Length: 383
Image 1 (tube, helix red, strand yellow):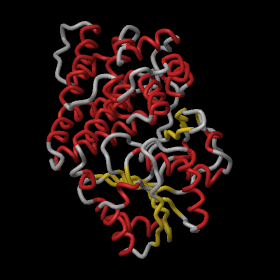
Image 2: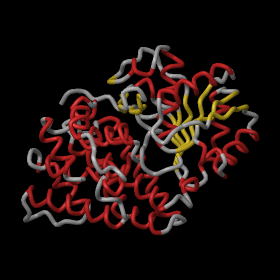
Image 3: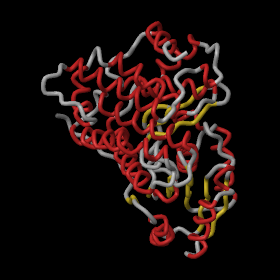
Image 4: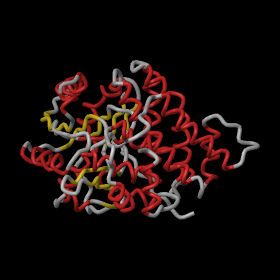
């Protein structure tokens, strides 16, 4: 086996109440003033008030940039970068789910390397380590606080730019389940299914290896057991904490193994129609994996075992069928929409969606690369 490189933030805080250690760590790093990156909803929430109180107590100055969109744009990154420079901040403190985390990664890379966001679309396009990011996560799904992947929408092309860059890795991540209490059931479901997509794709991709497999399989088991509980009762702290462990595992797995064609397709739906990323992933996951199973059915056997199938007398194809039907059942249990029509998209541009999917950086990590017509047919299955 060829050598592997494993990327993960140097410091990772996990578990109930770990947010209270934030100030002490920032002091140890020697930072004096942070640019808090968040969105309008969170900026008026108890979560931001808690972060501010912790920073105040630790004597750390801060300013807030809260103009992050659900699918963050180049404009968001540029405006945040301008504030970073104007306020002379020496670190970035991202607070939120994938959107603030991705915005922070974009600002970090531009602050250290210059240029425009489009210069960094693709794999390892930067030369210098990014501006330091302290990533405080508030949703159990994207794992954006942990990974070398981030996604920024190019408003002019209506394309989500996939940036996979070791230099964008956060200096520290914070995953406190107490920050995830009271989240709406729909958001919990969407982010949880996003995490499941990360795990499944990390297992199926040719880039998988024993270390990433172990992490992703453990995450799959946790998600199937605890996501329905977290959706049903947003204050179930045990379920929330278990989902924190799951996203930590999936983040490390897919950041180092890769993703696949589910994400390649979901990125286009989000970029073109501004749809929620986790929901798009959830709708596409069983459809794409059904196609993948024709090429790598053996990849689904361990997944089936981890979610409860006695595989002793089962074929690889039967294991794959069990996994795919179980994914569909879980999506239905947590009430994920099944079609684009339910999301208000009744006449999608299938040609453009397919063309852009095939250009997406995640597409090339899939077990096989569909052609344009196959991709169109995959999209049709969720109309």
